[in-house]
Image (cartoon, rainbow, N blue to C red):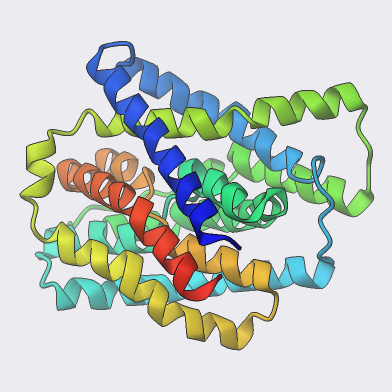
Length: 308
């Protein structure tokens, strides 16, 4: 794994994010377009990329590895809330914001940024396993995530089971079905799905940049608790996680995917859930901005330290 190549890929992704930022400032993008692009990404292009992950490459791992990824994913999402609780205590986060910080620690950006980054670093085979982690993400974010977001706020928790069957989860189930049955789709259909899936990376990066453009830059850099939080989340936590993961994960690909997943910036879901449950929307948006910006450096750093 060439760290220079990975760094170049991260810089490319960042440049597309920057383009999205400036397109918003030039009024070629706006908030309404962002909402529409989000819907297209979540319901069309990302599901297509997930399905294409088993159409465009030969996934060599067997049933035991896939089952292990499920177990590993569940273990990570059980442990991360505990870690998030310790982080908010160490940073002395005010009680009304503790739920948001724990949420941001648990739920990293797999959907928008995770798939493109995993594909850039590890190839299409990684998209297949990232889709499994994404299934678990959706299961937890709409159940445990709701409880966490409301921690310390005194709000009543309302769960909607329908949210568990998102297009991403359905696409992941379809990908698993294709993988295990060995079904071969017609070339024209397979290539079309792959072409639609390939739209995900540039569109997701443009959307991230356009979304970040809605946040006043000065306010981001004066939210001082974001600095130590970002350092802990995207450097210290992965550094601690690596030797623990290596004790239980023998497959280098699965190990790399799990480590990078933990190293990803805060998920855009933090802003959406803060909006839905009357959380600190501004803080969520600022943290998404800062962690996304610094991930251009922190992810190649983690790769250089442990995966090269």
